[in-house]
Amino acid sequence: MRELPDLIRETPPPATGASSVTRLIMAIVGPYWLRTYGIALGMALLLTFTAANGTGSVPLLIRFPYWLILMVFGTLIAQVTGRMLDRFASLNLWQTIAVMIAITTPLICVMVWLVTAAFNSDHALEPARLVRLVEPVLVITVAMAALHVLINGTPAQSHAFASDVQTEPGVVFRERLPFKFRHAEIHALEAEDHYLRVHTSAGDTLILMRLYDAIRELDGIEGSQTHRSWWVAKAAVTDTIRASGRVSFTLKDGLIAPVSRGYAKALKQDGWL
Image 1 (cartoon, helix red, strand yellow):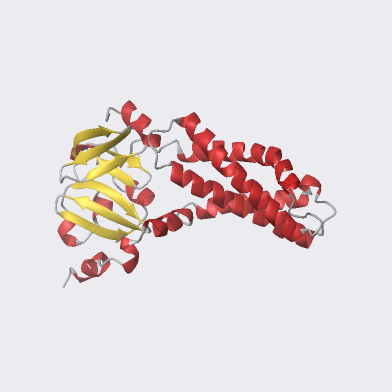
Image 2 (cartoon, rainbow, N blue to C red):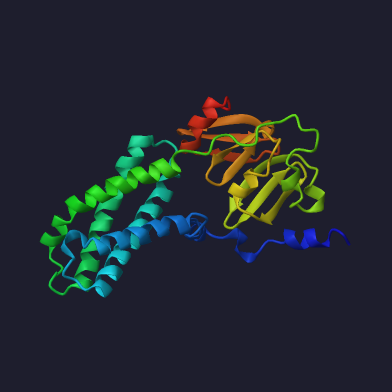
């Protein structure tokens, strides 16, 4: 009877096997959405009260929604583009910035062109107006691309180095697992939407937890984040695979754990590669 709560908690929801589109949506509104769109809101307020880009003659109740829509949709475009580029481990820092600017600049230009015309009937949908938007939008996209790379391209360094503590390593995290997994060797953690798949020597299980929070509870287990959605125990790595400019780890149970471009440098410095 003591295992009933664990068995109930182990049951995954229907969304666990979500499609790639669902995963992208969940990534956009995931753990960082409040900070990301909070910044967009702050920028909208700043641009509203400074009457940026000659909008001082526009009434405040119109000016604020205008800037808010531009900031939110601009952030969304940059975020989706950044998530897509994160899949390409072969791109270096400058290539990532260049490709991100090349993709987002025309998209944001068209978005600003359409939104401005919707808010101001004097701004007809003329190609000449669209061309004039390229220069100011380009300045903004360069800053957004650099910010994305700085925030997401710099990985969290290796976490939870092995310690001399006599208790079982990762004891706090283990208490969250179903009973049969609590004393198994932890091989890897894989984020799946709002859930976390824990790969162990006894199999794998799902728990409701963020990857970031789980890593903080892995005291005594030497390991590192290898990807935005993966943490790997160093003792579980049996081989390193390099193919088509990408790197991945083979784990004890045959599982393949990806290594993204952003985390490869830190892993190399720590002796993993």
